[in-house]
Image 1 (cartoon, rainbow, N blue to C red):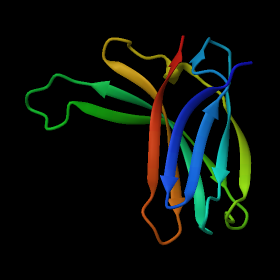
Image 2 (cartoon, rainbow, N blue to C red; image 1 turned 90 degrees about the horizontal axis):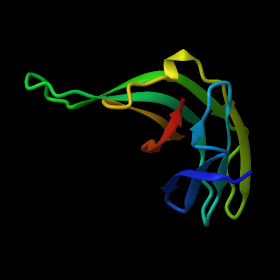
Image 3 (tube, one colour; image 1 turned 135 degrees about the vertical axis):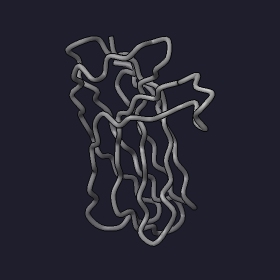
Image 4 (cartoon, rainbow, N blue to C red; image 1 turned 180 degrees about the vertical axis):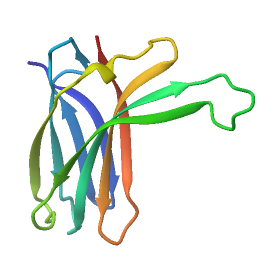
Length: 134
C-alpha cells in the first residue's frame, strides 16, 4: 500500500513526520498511520504528541471576525517514554476509527488531521493536512 505523507514539524534539530496509509478513506475504513520522530542533532524532551481530527467550517458572515472555525471531532494522544535522543528515530503507529461526524459538507467544510508536538518547557508546534472520508 502506498504511504501518503501528511505533515512535517521541525523543532530545533528534531523532526516529527506524520504519515498515513491513505488520505482518502471510504466508509468503514480506518485511518492508519505512523508518527516518525527523528532526534536530529540535539536531545529534545517531548511531553506528548496529539493527533486531532477536526472539521474546518468556512462561513461567509460579515458580523464575525473569523471566516474559518474549527470543531474537534476526536483527539488521540501519543505518550512517549523517555527523551528523543539525538540521531535516534522512533516510530509510533496509530489507528483512528471514523464515525458519522467525519461526514462533511464538501462546499463549506474540510476534514483535517492536525499533529501537535508538545515540547517540555517550549512552544508547541503543529502542522495539519486535509483528509477525505466518503
